Length: 296
Image 1 (cartoon, rainbow, N blue to C red):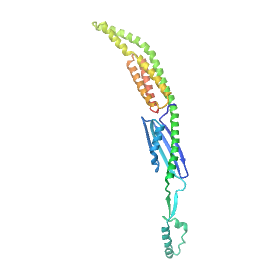
Image 2: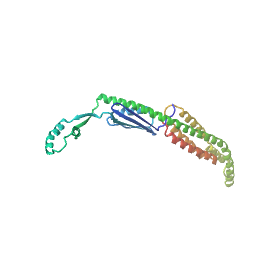
Image 3: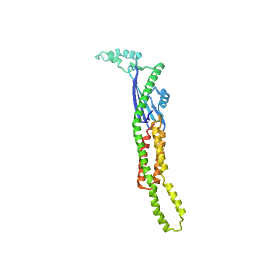
Image 4: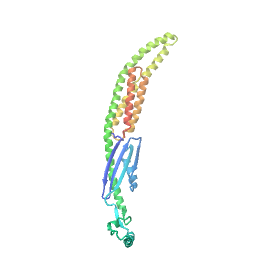
């Protein structure tokens, strides 16, 4: 399975005869997995199921799920307030006697009086609530699948960038190895000049002590071990990019190892060209770490 990004977005709309709903899922990078839910009123009870299914679908990332719900179709039953209507009708003769020139009251006018007709919200049955929850959760599975697909597509683009950076590290390591072959000879030449100056200034210094110092400097300047480890890390990174499952944490650890070897290479470098390669390595590793932060 190719690598997946932790960044993505998906949206899913659904509905039945009574309701229309919309799921929105957003995901950004995170050190672990965190699920946040904002569910429509009346559907808070499905939150544990939403969290469980989301956790099963993704290993890492900060994932936000929003569910909006809108009532559609008939809003509910209309009830006639007969008691209030009787009171209004009982007042009509008195009103006609007081205002004889007034037009006769119309039915639509009477029914439009506040409180005569009342809309009563229909209370869903337990079976209706269960059916709504099941339908909404079915669309949750679809929006989670769409989010996973979106993250996988982003991961494919991310993999190309990461693989390119790993290749750059491999190329820089090869250049450093070429320069490292010539480094002992250059150091030896400089040491000869320095030793001549030291012997002239300090004739009492024994040859054995000088040889010890030379050997110590040679060991400190040997970068072959660091280059070998860089090659091993490059091979490990390429294997991880082709491996199934979430590899983001392992790649992040490899970035730390890359950086450690690049730092040591710079500190051991005895010439400017090798130092420049070490600095280029550090810059490339920083770019790699930035990209790896988005991998699941």
